[in-house]
Length: 317
Length: 265
Image 1 (cartoon, each protein chain N blue to C red):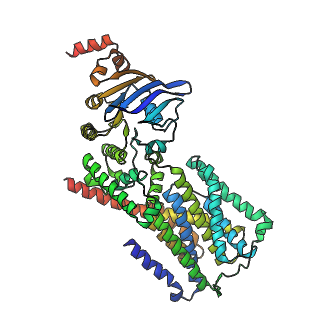
Image 2: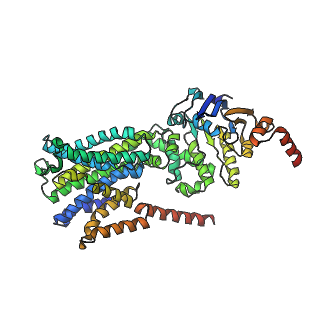
Image 3: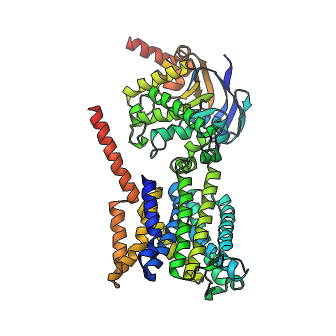
């Protein structure tokens, strides 16, 4: 049922370039797809495994630079750049995660935040590699078999295929026994250990997978912008991913996917009021958090539990 | 009966305080053994050290013929020693079915590749876990809640869920850390009946508990700890009449206990 609905939504989104000729709307569509993937990757490590990782911003940046440099400096293709982005990020995540995940959850938050800031510094100051504050402009459009994805509408297909593939993979992962084990680790780690499961490989794997997917998403996004510079590591991106996860409901796959698409479109829908746009956006977020402190998915879940209690009460009467 | 759990000379101290000061005992296969003692006598430390949640300073723990001393908690669990916790630990946000399924998942041979390909090995593992779960849920009387999130259950019911989860992988022995502490008195009897029934079916339990009546009703053998040392060991009747136990546990000298008994009579 959920899958059928998701398929319909995916197909409708896929048809977007046929429904509108506006590059502006299609551009929003591209951002929505890529941000949703990055948020779903954050959801894997934060919503499922319970590890609040600010390193996502660093992975996003490393992925962007890795893809851009593969093409511009090393003469590779956009596609191999994405693969490099994923591999480098997975390796970095393993190196950062292995010692850090042995500390407690609070230390993990601090270390990941520091990591993100460090990546920003490198992007700005390692001028030989990243070209510093000037960045790398004029990234060429991706090509495949002689076909060039050189318009916004054509680039939309890349974002769409990427999003469907990544979300499909994440859904398969999260709904498997592995996903269930991640939820168990978040809820009660000592009990997981008492049941013979070592939490460390699960935590490490979810952190590394999340990093790889975020990196690839960053790679796609910078070729959408056609430029990468240190602003690509603006905290705005981390904030966006986090808001999507929190409003959607951490630990709910579909909640986060829906909120990713809705919240990417929301600031644009508020453009009717240019002056108060961000204020209205903020008010909507605050109200949403008041009404649904555990996100949309959490709110639905609480209603379901209330119904369950009610029916149990009636059955006992 | 042969011993399924053998601990010898357990020692553990915190900042100079000897929580365990050379404790040795054995648990016979198929028995219910009680571990009692006043607050701070080292009962919980013993359970934590045996199950690998705390590191022993010295001593030896053997499960059947396997030496499990100093191994990490998840290795000890895989060797067949399951435990519950004093403050109930279950997965509040998962339903009862998943709570039980996770408890067994590390013990079946199906890998994530089996799951992805839905191999026969995976399907058989799932079916076996489902059958076991249904049996246990019936035993603890929570069939009605099988598909419900366990967070909605009462404290006593949650303790039963924790017990059922510990039994899921057919363990060699289950360590219960205060299974009836904080449980509504009317439920205590239910837990007692369930444990006796499981024991008749062949399960072995080591129970740490304050409720003396509960221990007396259930246990074949009782071990009394005091200040990190084993004070006494024997059947419930033997323990109850042991003057050293009365003094340590009830804070009474034998004379006082006798006087109280006369007063009661």
